[in-house]
Image (cartoon, rainbow, N blue to C red):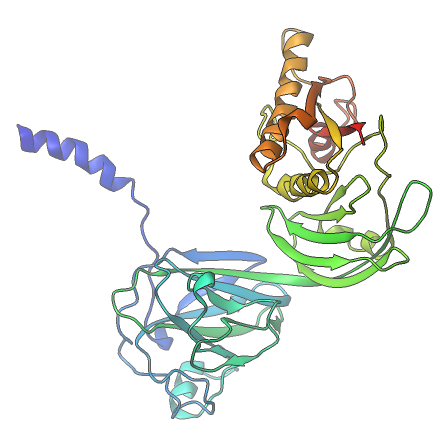
Length: 398
């Protein structure tokens, strides 16, 4: 009876485990991945050995950046489903694993046969031992300006490559160590975009400010500064169908965050941003501190704007603020419930600031319910409704 009960309890638990993705250790049966704007493969099973053929070595490739030999390898055939710049991250499950990689472009003939018969050099290769702070990650990113990285402790990333829709590439990964724990492969095809604009105060005077481009998770993509005349120009790569934030910060002004997508790139060539001066009694929307519908939980991409608010309060010790919460046409039975709900949104932001070390006595909260929506329902679209779910900042003392 005890054994029977154990089986009843155990089977559902095991069935809930996520099945690991399969890897293939030879070029000829490489795992085919259709690479779109964002493609994630894994977590995978453990690479064990080099398969049936030892396909990579410095002797077979015309480069010193080839593996000494394949140890525990995984092959992927990458079929580009869009054009742009390819970046990727190889993320080991166990951070002590040491992954090397080589990336080849496939011609019209059978690539795997050609690899065996001829000396083919990779387009990108990294066989270094990465720095510990990267937790074993390697790949292609925009921070690197190197096409190849040789063995030894060094940089872990190579620069991106430009790809076209329909092209085929072969990526081979090699974990030097035995008893690894698999990996995740995170690929992106990005579009290079020019960001040009000017930052002014409310009197049209130019402002020097910090500019940070962040993604929808709140991760920083690029950090720039405007010039003395308020202008800025930089390039960054973004992915189709994803939203990003441009965060503007100056020590003496209200900060602002603008949400953008690739479709907005024409507007980004002549973007004018106004950061009003901090002044007692002045109220301002700081941009993208928005909330999940029906929730007091802020969206992840709000975090950079909230961190700018932390920095502003730390820089100006006399600054005291009022955080005002807003909602987007709730169906609550009473106005008091709606007002209390928006106060809780304001409190969520206050709690974040306090957690970051700001004295709670410098922050008051209020809620306006649905009384000050930026866009009236039911005409408002989804993006406008999100903008309604916001907080505003008022200066109480400065």
